[in-house]
Image (tube, rainbow, N blue to C red; front, side):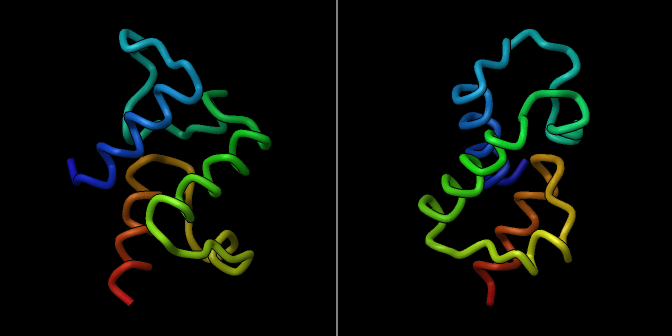
Length: 83
């Protein structure tokens, strides 16, 4: 688990009030298909990512990169930071 994935998981669990014992929740679960985050939550999550990691998530990023799981989002952030 990367530091970014760990931070994202902690943020998502706290912000969206996900029970620590929820067996469906993991860093590989599809956050939207499983109902952990809705479209309004997605907007808030993007704002958190931009503020926390000092980067911009563009519409092109949203089309080019899968951002459905914690691990996918963490990999995306890592790529953006490395640029």
